[in-house]
Image (cartoon, rainbow, N blue to C red; front, side, top):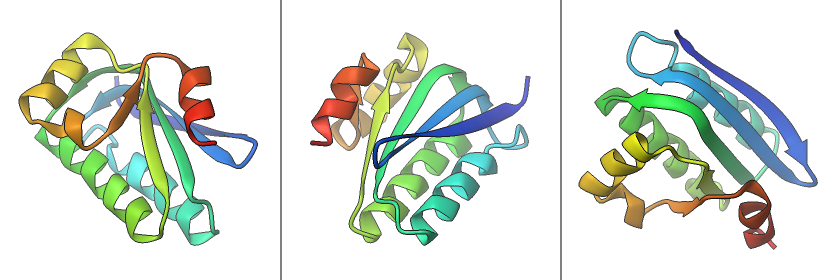
Length: 114
């Protein structure tokens, strides 16, 4: 399965629902492309729902960091929600769990933007 991203707005927050394998060659640039479109139109709050992402490689990790950097550079915030255990393990091994604000439930993550 490739990588897919669908977007929705909850108030002023852009929710990116990701599914598939976040890897080089699986369409991983779709995430960065989506973020760039919304950042360029002035959005600053992003919630990345990783519930449908079951595998991520070094390219995928880099893509998450690139998105985070672009959003932060524009004065915005990005949070992760519903990260499955294998992806969470990878974020912990790479110590990126200290960079990302990670939540288990979408409603809690959305409230944290307030």
